[in-house]
Picture 1: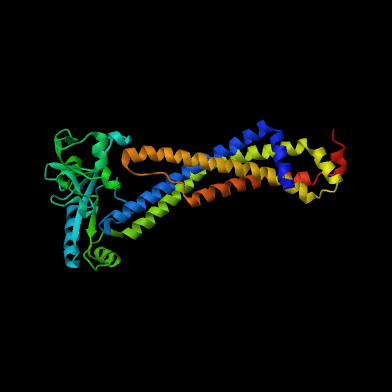
Picture 2 (picture 1 turned 45 degrees about the vertical axis):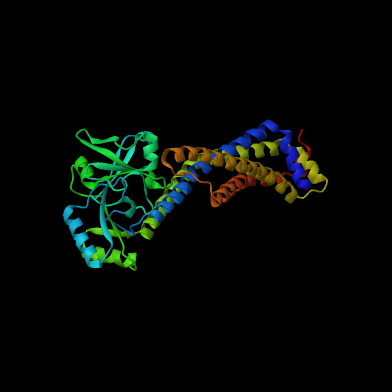
Length: 380
């Protein structure tokens, strides 16, 4: 307790310097938390969505991996026909070719994500639990069924016109009930309409729904053997790929925030070093009165750790507040929380802050504990 009171007294004796150092650590930690919270939020959102998707197998061109959104249509009609024949031979429930088309800009309020499905295929085959709030669930040859969120933010209702190309229009025939998932932001249209808009006969991926009792891994390997040039991914394989991709993105975001962390560490080191320089005589008096070198070392190091820990805790709070504000926007626009401050992220942030203080304080603390008593007492 005596050591802690000495540390607190010294920090309060120089309030402006201590406050500026605290702000440096706070900003560094907050930026790191905010950057990394996107990885945690995306991880949670993706895994929740994957758990809701009906088909257990996604077939993509060989060499491709991960999700089909934004991928090029590279599965030709002959490969699709071979997959349908292999599916019938294996006794699967359904083989569903699909194709995605994005229209609009980066702003969710002006962007549209179309998913093409074969005529007569209901969207709830891919996203179990979908129900029509208005109109029909399955779009006709010239119709479209829109998710709840995209209908709300774009003002779409039954009879609204959607223009895929200057010559290709579809009319809204159904509006879905909100599910809180990805389907709320999709517009389901006939596969042929998107193929016409893109000028292709190919599809992006083929989704395979299993019959009761079938094992996804066994069916996936059988499809790969029966149809050369494709890769059949189970939901668990897609999850593993997503986790690897998110870990890489976490490292990139941490690298970006590392600049702010280095600046925060230099501020702590500067503050502690200046404190040691100004208190050399005080340390000499302490040593003359019987204080050991270890006591001086711990005193100086604790100052650095206290500033870093307090700045880290406040930075964690500020980062969590920023993540909350981001989620308010993304929930309103796309119905998904894309930022999350989890327990492991909070512990990591506090650990980094403490490591920052420890690294910044070790050298000044060592020098303070090694100052000769005679030299220290001779300082003016």
